[in-house]
Length: 109
Image (cartoon, rainbow, N blue to C red; front, side):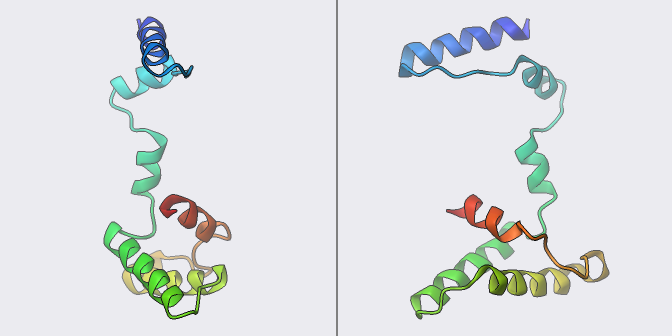
């Protein structure tokens, strides 16, 4: 079953890399049943498209190169404008969440 498969792959990984990992047999069952992973689900819920994220990243780099690195507040304001322009009333009036810029920085660091 799924538990045996996970145990076998944990052992294969350990034999090859010398590092122990833990695989979830319940996650394997969910994925095999057609469910999506948390990271895939989060990507589908993203405020920015991949192209918009690239624009934001290039803007951050450009501003940094000019000696004006963006604060989290400035980044939030920039992203809020993009999302409001694209999504209109579907985008919350408060903008992206309080931790959005931190998660964005972690994702693209």
